[in-house]
Picture 1 (cartoon, rainbow, N blue to C red):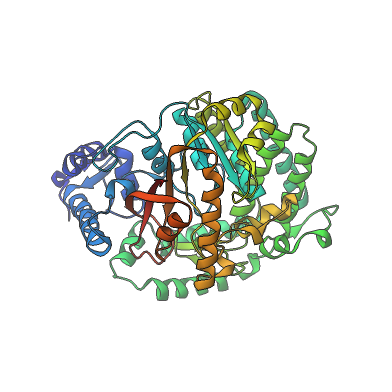
Picture 2: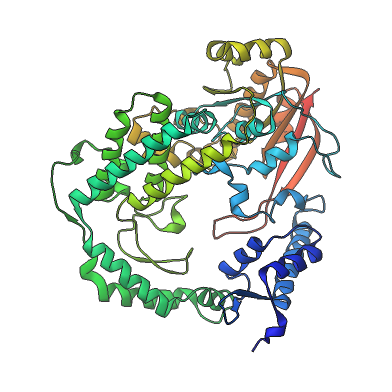
Length: 531
């Protein structure tokens, strides 16, 4: 048994860790380790969390060993600082960056590192200053633009996806917080009333109660996590046995009842929504959609669309572990490898709608207090042929004057990786809900084209065309930063075809991946300039 003398509170543990690691560690970092079973949880007579310093030291020594192992496998030039492994998720998804999930998004701290006015042993020169103009020709969900606005740099983003543009614009728009709070909460309450009026969830609530009791008895956390992690118990065999027991005991409760008709026409709903959402959730989504359509302000409409899309993503009939990449429809309770307990698919949207509505208001408030008075413009189009000057002139005459007088100072972007993501398909539910036009065939390097030689050749051609086109709008000595997992060694050829030279490479380990395959890999930030 661990002696009380060996235990300290989270504050003392954080102070010790800060000294041991030679960087700041705060008490919430220590609590994270406890909550996710990285270290054991102890407590005193008053139920305060206590930490065993010996265990904490072993944990951090393993982290430092991982750094050495990764460098051995991937190269000593790996910049571990750029892993940002010491940051909590709340920091890497701060303010509006978490308004909507997006696969393939780089963390804001990576953008900030290259755009800010600080230097270190790797980044030896400040390359961007306040009120410069930065361009992201593969904008995605707008990370570069949001961070630029926080730093005080003008920014332009281009993306082929209409939905990506919608997400980015919603993040960057200015709002009357009091006004949107009233509208968002009103829509939330009306949807709650609709759900209560039309659906009987007594079986579902009873199922959840029985699931909670069952999990307390057979999947107590964090104890069960530690047993699985340390190999004391076989997770797959144990979970399969307990799940079968739970399903047999509660089969009669896995039913949903409709109390009242007069709902949206199921026959007119698109195929993706019919496949991946329960009937109750489909009906609630479409009710909220009618509320959106009654709003006159297009900016607020789009804000509501992002909230509804975020809710829809979380409420698909799949396991928690497969939310990012749908694999099969899940309609009954299942063992969750993410949460280490029995979970069940979402039955309605209300809990998520409540949480995301209030979370959105808070995040917009947080960003509103940080963002600077600079221009940020989103352009929907193909970066291989877009005329940025013309587009900005049509959208914002004041910004167009600045752009004409000084050109774009540099690029910070992360193009698609070859054969990794179908960028439109990841938000298929949103495209169907809002009837948004898709341009799948114009994506560069999508998953559906694979990773073969033809796909690689097309990728090189596509990225090169983008760089050749946007070079026209960048000043002659501008800096091009491109984040890529270049495992096919394509970027030397891309640089050559684009009339650019690679002047530096920054290699970073990619940690905190959600996939079960967590083999070490690094991505490279290429720094290029005109030849």
